[in-house]
Image (cartoon, rainbow, N blue to C red):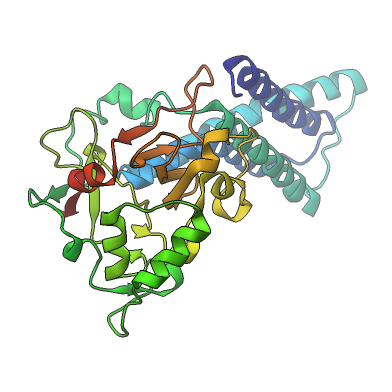
Length: 347
């Protein structure tokens, strides 16, 4: 599993590799116009090493802080590249006793960007095994207090106090093939009959909770009606940070044909956005039925214990700094999970 020593070694390798590349360009006395391309490659490698934080910022309405950081990151990388390039250039001139700056060539743009792409891939891999970030804000924003003191208007929500009912669970629009943004108010939603439920349970080898069956009688999965649950310890939610979205960013309950075990869901490469470098599956995942999924975040029924299945929600690709998986949030059964759901909408 992921661990801090492994991550540290990989980050050292990534940093040294990029520095050696920049040093080599100076030793070969390449054109100074190579420097902006080197800086772009370095910046890409750095940013891809923290994509999990970028994704969280997008989900919680704080993405603006990270876009503001990009020009500063590029400027820092440009200064770093320039310094290393000049060191290499100076050493080359010292030992050769001559200065012969090469003319700018297409390769001076291609090779730095290619090196940056390789660095980005390694940074992506490091990010995925490193686990849960210690902060969801850029360091400069935390130091200035922008993460706490200034109100963030983006991401403000209104959470309804009314309980969710079966009739209000689904949105009043249909979504084409599970793609948000392609909503249509035409057509008739497909729903499951008793025979369909019987065949579904036979395929899964599991009896579904009665309340979930009632939902499938209403509609065979699809867009839910702005549903969330409160984060533990939150009593007065007013921001997207205060809630969890158990049905994912897509806000959808899986159609019956898409119901599968967590083992299968975590095995399918098309269901995740990148390889994390570790096998996150466990034996219990064969006895879990996924109701909703966003990358490696799963909402599932857990049949590993006698009696009605528990409902679990968690990110199977997130680890702490010691490599331990992030704890799963549990509800004792589907009725308890359903009772915890709340409707929300932007403020």
